Image (cartoon, helix red, strand yellow):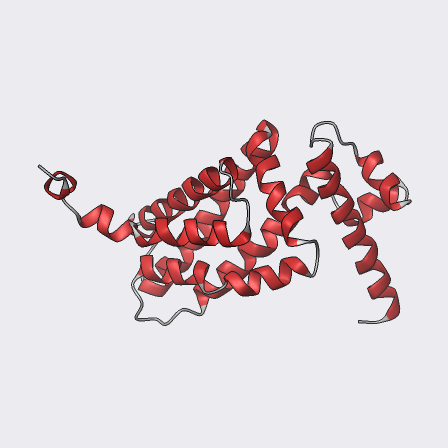
Length: 210
C-alpha cells in the first residue's frame, strides 16, 4: 500500500469511526452526513467518495464480519454436515472477525452500534433485508457443498433460515441485556447454537419433571 492509498484508508477509517460515534451518542436519525464530515474536518463531497450514505457506514463493519463468515464456510471440510459447518464457520472465525474489526474501530464502539441498529426502525429494517441476502448466499454455498440445486431442493434454505433465526435471537437478547461485552455475545451465541440439535431432536414434554 503506497502513501496515497494509506492516506485514503485513514480518511475512510476516520469517517467511519466518527459516524459510529455520532450514531451512538446522538442517534442515527439525528446524525447527518454533514455532521460526520465536519467531525473529520472534510467536505460532504469527500464523504461521498468513500460511502454512498450514512446507512453504509452503519453496516460497514458488520459487512466485513459477514464476509469472513462466508469465507470460513467455504473452507469447512466437505464431509461436515451443513448445520455443523455453519456453526463452526461462525464460532471459529470469531477471533479473526474481532481482529479485523479492531483494525477499523474500537470493539466496544462496534458492539454499541448493535444496540443502535436494534433500536432504530430504519436500520433494523435494513439489517433484516441484509440478513435475508446473506442467508441466500449461505444457502447457495451449502447447496454447492452438498451437490444440490438450491432451487430444486429446499433443504439448504431451510437449514440456513434456522441458523439465521438463532443468530437473530441471540443478537436481540444480547443487545437488550446487561452484558454488552464481546465475551457475553460469544457465550450467548455459543449456547444457543449448541441447543439447535437437541431442540430439534428432543421430546420436550418427556424431558419435563413430573
